[in-house]
Length: 367
Image (cartoon, rainbow, N blue to C red; front, side, top):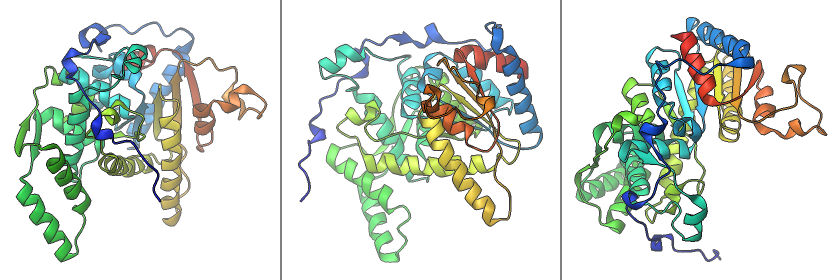
């Protein structure tokens, strides 16, 4: 017998405009042409990272930037965009919060809320447009075979999405069942279910974004650079919306993981991973992607990947990882991101400091 569960469609949401947000985009935006902050003791390591990126791109190997939401909330989107435009970064990977804040800055020009007070009031994350537009982007993007990140980027670039006619979806579902070609059947049925359940309009749904140029996700889509999203069901505020759909989100994230595996497989012997402010998602997802890539390489008679990994975070770590892994009785052994990355077969360097210092100096060295 299935356990009893809450009916999440009973959640009441409010317009995003009524939320008091902590930060306006213009207050946090970093000008990529501004002089970078002094790198201090990090300068030698940052120079090594920049040189490894140059070597990777000269050899045709991929450079993957995996980041947490604070990169977006620190206003570094345009810095990363210029690194993509110049060809230095070939793939972006983030968690669910990374695209949520990015989308809110594009839609409203501000983001982030008071978690403590809003949880107590039962309002944390319960904002209509963020959850609704994310789901609609993912649901409609799936019809074109797009994953989570590309769906959000396309939604911002297009200023909305095309919602098919219910009659056309019903015919498509029936045809798929008759022909035995169910490739799009899950996406079609989930969209159809949402259209029926929430009485969504057909045709092009126009969503005005006040500042679409603020979106790193849209910039990646425009430039043709994959931006993949690696969320967890229940992690993000989009799951506090009555329309939240784990099947749709999971399918989109599954597509994105396969795209990430392809990028990791293209690292070869000289590829680079930049992990910026992602203590959980980046190491957990990357280690599985490396394992799959090596599985496929072994089938082709190729040796394992040996990526260069630069980890940038604020944690003060009392261990020199160039000495190898610390013993299990040392606290550093339990710092997941360094431990996982140190096991990936290549060289890892840890840069403890602000991500603005790290990325702005990388941008300056590669300009």
